Length: 170
Image 1 (cartoon, one colour):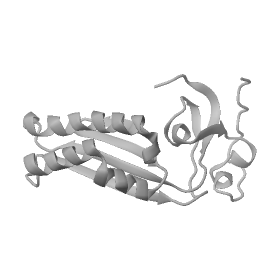
Image 2: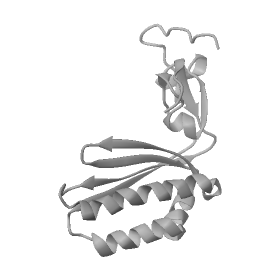
Image 3: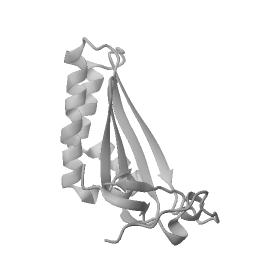
């Protein structure tokens, strides 16, 4: 996952961006022949995105549960995300295959959620973490001064509820 960076950090993004959550859920465990191809299709799509950053893709993180997997992705714009969904060769093939082989049979579920984030309308904090999530998609900066509290990171005023320890020297 990466080297742990001691201290408190936050993410900075230039302009607006998109958070896209996509995943699958295994509804019938023993129907491996139905859900395994869905699971296996994710890797090549993510590889295609990392190899073609000009598509607007910024980064992704994977999260496993006992019934499935979720990916949190960051994109520069909804238009670029939608363009990939409708024109990405690997994605289109996986979409067609799912509709043909699984469809609405209920064996495996897929889902996505899309959030359009206006400039400055987000906040994050990472304490003793590797560079992760939004900080990996954007910039990883110290959560001090105007970035010390959630309110301040959102451009508001707010004093820390508890004293903030200083970040270790680099």
